[in-house]
Length: 262
Image (cartoon, rainbow, N blue to C red):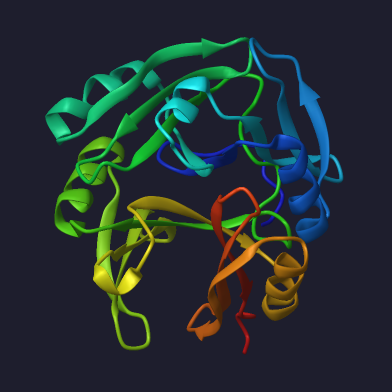
């Protein structure tokens, strides 16, 4: 069901882009996905909600000054819906991670915290109030999958099981092992791949996948708009995917999902 009105505890519910040039980033993603934008008043730089029709599907905002000082590249963030942020954040240390941003209210939108897993990857916690998350999933231009790229898959699986109650199993993904995280047996939360020397420039991260109708055409369009093709369109069991970079350096994936009846 692509239209969403709520998410359960442990479900990835939102993605946003921290970028060095929000105006150019908005133009790039609008060309790729057809996004329009709504600026939300916020302390500091404006936060832009990307929309498909009336559905909010992602966020775009200017990176914090501290990230510029530390030469942190533009990046996509993901947020997991939790019933209560504070007790989940309090459990992070015992699970093997650390809290980067302590729980705080975001006006009337919800309550947030940001934590770091044992592999150094950041992930957000979101307790919704007026903003529950993306109103559309699995449709072209909206998020469809989330994937952890990390060198220590065992430590990561243990961390996320303790923090969110996720269960994991390993699946053959056409020649390599791929870990699937599950909230329940029939409800996957995302995936995980082991990061090693063969991954080149990629650093540990949570990778956001956006659904598209034509993977090859989207990759070509990204190039024409100043982006990069990091991994070319490739067939995998779920569909045809590509790993792309935006003009500012944000990395994301696109996938044309295979129809279930094929």
